[in-house]
Image (cartoon, rainbow, N blue to C red; front, side, top):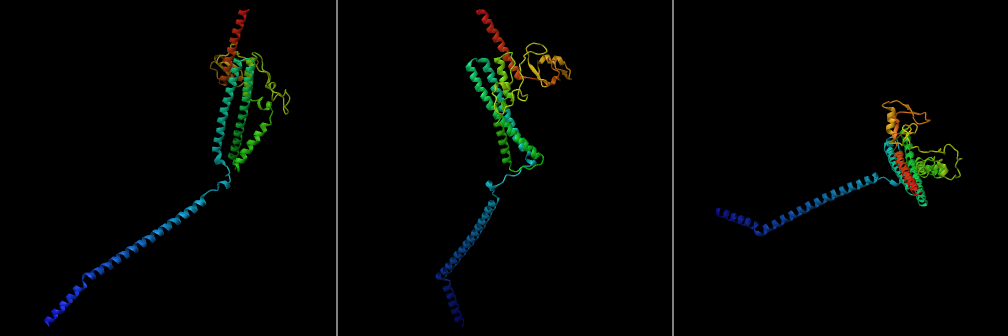
Amino acid sequence: MAVASSSRRKRVAHSSDIEDGPTQKSAREDVDADDEIARSVVKKEKKSVKGKGRATETHQREDADEEDDEDDKIDAENFPDQPLDKSHAIPMKGLASDWEIMIRTIQRTNNMVSDVAVALADAVEGDEGQKDLLDLERSLKDLVDIENEMHTNHEVIQNLVQEVTSGTEIDNIIEQYQGNVRKSKKSYAIKTTRQKYAKNETYKYFKQSIYEIEHPGVAMPPVTEFMSKEPGDVSDDDDDLEMGAVTQDYKCPLTLRPLENPVTSEICGHSFSQDAIRGLFDGYRGAKKCPASGCTREFRLSDCKPNKELAKKLKLHTRRLKRKDQEQEVEEIIE
């Protein structure tokens, strides 16, 4: 029995050795490798599915965002103008201020043209000088027209500001603004030459300055006499258009000598030498009767302001007098 048992154990052991042989081990390794590959493939497929899912979700979100963007876009061509109200008053006032700046700029240009004309009239005589003066006058008229258009834009905006400030909501602001400007420009365009320029202070100064050079000591006639009458003009003696004869007196009413550092009263328009009028008041702060002959107006010293334009004309006048004296001396020597 012991021998038989030993024999069986040997056969079992031998059988076990057969099961663990090289061929069977290789087969198990192949199976394990296939399982590993299968598991790897499954993992990759799961990742791919997840990736596709995330990509799909991303695309869906992007599509939704694009739809939102489409909803948020404004159709500029069909978007109506929004009404203006009180909240827009400040930026509208800013636009009006811009026009005021441009008006002041062109006014300075107008004054420069007048100064050039005065210097030209003083320096050049004859037909050539007259031709140049006529060219400058035409240029000045063009500038006056441009200044009027600027005033029109400024006034239209100011009127719109008053409307919104009072609580009125304005629809179609562009149409209203452009329409009012066109209407005003059309009214100006049909005016006559006298109606456009006879009451314009810049143009009157231009004409008077040149006239004083060409006709020293002679009062200038009304500005309308330099302009032909056109259909639509009123009679020449109409007070609204006529400017009475004016002559510039370069003597101080107090010293009876040529003006020095001239100041002009804003109350009556008479001019004085600065030191002379200060001496008249001598610290008195109240109003005094104007010392100019025939004037009954009263003013304070603070009403007298430096007159730069008069100072320039005074220099030209003094220079003309000196030149005239020199010419007379030459004539006397020749004789």
